Length: 158
Image 1 (tube, one colour):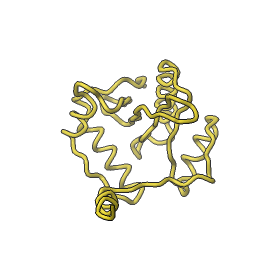
Image 2: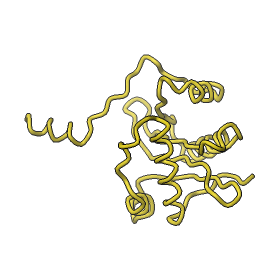
Image 3: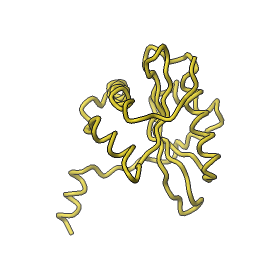
Image 4: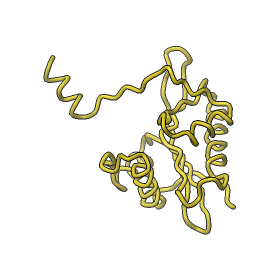
């Protein structure tokens, strides 16, 4: 089995397929608005907005981990893991561990103070996976989003 590697532009069609597979798993199929061009431009332009690791099985990308920098007022520089995705057919084969290992090594090389991410409260297998790896799943915190319509509505109320 191959080790994770940094993604390249040519990987983005498959990366998008895995993002869409995750959206289906999370019962949010209509939530994915990005396309391959967005991923190519945002990840490989003059100022990349994310770093993506991929892992191949039999010449097909079967897992990704997409990260980007954040800043914590408490800790300083941190790394945000937006998504760690393993195709349904490859779950339980160790790909998730390999991808998380790559993310943590990357974070260490960057010298960040924390790696953070979210996990759905009903995704017991992911929660158990992360806790086995030593992550602190903070159940007393809530994720807060203001979507595009929410931003517009907010602005209109000013």
